[in-house]
Amino acid sequence: MIEQIPAVIAGAGPVGLSIALDLSRRGIRSVVLERKQRLDPHSRATLLVPRSLQYFERLGVLDKLLAAGQRNDAIRILRATDHRPLFTFDFGMLADRTSTPFALALSQDKTERILLDAARTTGLVEVAFDTPFERFEQHREKVLVAAGGGIAFETGVLVGADGAHSSVRAQLGWELEGKTYRTRAVLADIRVSPESDIADGWLADPKAASFTIAIRFSKGVWRIIESAVPETATDAALPERARDLANAIFGPDAWRETLWVASYRKHERRSAQFVQGRVVLAGDSAHLNSPAGGQGMNAGLADAELLSNQIAQMLDDPSRAVAFLAHYGNERMGAFDHDIRGLTDKLEAMETMPAWFRNLVFSAAGIARAMGVETYVARRLSMLSQ
Image 1 (cartoon, rainbow, N blue to C red):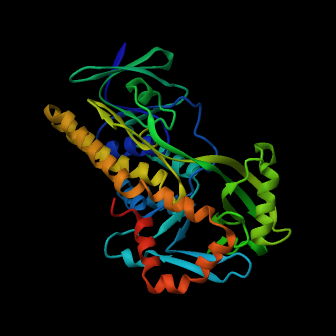
Image 2: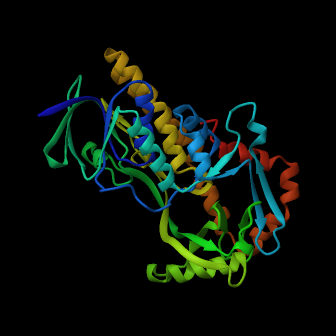
């Protein structure tokens, strides 16, 4: 039996769940297909920027997100050794442009849980775990979708929000084109001693071989990002490396526990197209870029906001369905090329420059402030222009 439903979404990550929740706020039913048996328990992305928070405010989940995370009205980067201020990226200047002039440090698993609970509460979203997308068959006015367990749907639109290894994109025959950087980065979530747990800024290690920063996202819990690690560093050695990083940033004996650690390669890639007829890509399925500066998950949430609007319009006016979705593709490909492509090159250069040169840059913080660099960076980080 084939179930008829307005929208089918492959992938129950933050992008897929946001689209489903957004559509439900407009009275539109959807089903979300997820191959995993449950939400991923790991933290992964940890920063929500003003544009994303503005979107979540409209979706009605901002208060729950704020209750679970660490609000940052300004991002203050302090020297780890003496807590001397290096840079301050103040979002207060954006108060006339957004109702959310701040960033939020919150682990992705908690963001997803809040989105999932909100979506299910609407009664218009079915999230089917352990039910992978398998294939689609596209027609002029509908898409037939087959999922695991012999389940089938007839839908007006299929959204591939199923990640970098997207099965939807694979059937379209598209690849993520671009480049992968040589360097490998490390993410480590650690718990520190109460006396080491400061709440007035993020900590940067000036002595590290590559840019290394610690971000507080809950009481006593910090995310350490080491931008480049030696190729000789094995995955088996990462837990010990996380402990060493913690003690280098917070001081001897600060480390209490490593909650999660992983390494990853940085990319700057996007699909040649985001849309084919009634099949659409969003998030990492469509583009893959460095998460530095919050440009990863937040770029996907910008996709979700525009795509949800276009889906609502196409369902209201089916005769213009292809045009509405094509507009989404053109807009978001343009945003990637203009706002994100090339940014990763700049971040990579900054993150991997020699420690002595990076310290020279840090010592010029006052000059940068006078030249308006901090203001420019805060505006870029907010993503309000995308």
